[in-house]
Amino acid sequence: MAIRQLSNPQPPPPARAMLPNGYNGNIDLHNRPKYKNKDGSISTVKSVGFNIDGVEVLLPTIGMKNGRPTQLTNDEAIALYKATGKHLGKFKTPEASNRMAELIHKHQEKYYGK
Image (cartoon, rainbow, N blue to C red; front, side, top):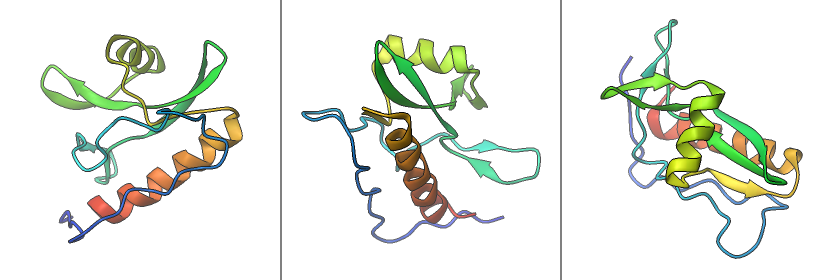
């Protein structure tokens, strides 16, 4: 399957209930590792929300390990967040985090192709 890029892709719009003042995600969605799934499709984010210190934090579970794109465990995703501070957004509620996860999924599908 060929990966196509849009000429001028736009980042996903913000989800409601995002915390104010710099709590938007800080991960470049246009430069993600491409993990090849068993069915031949690719994943670039596979986000999961976690309640960390009373805040819903949306994290990718696709990352790099030993120089290769890989599916991270939840513990690995959390450890990476704690080490780097990188996240896809911080929210007041799990529902808001889930809405952003869906928006990011749709954006990534358009950007990288199905």
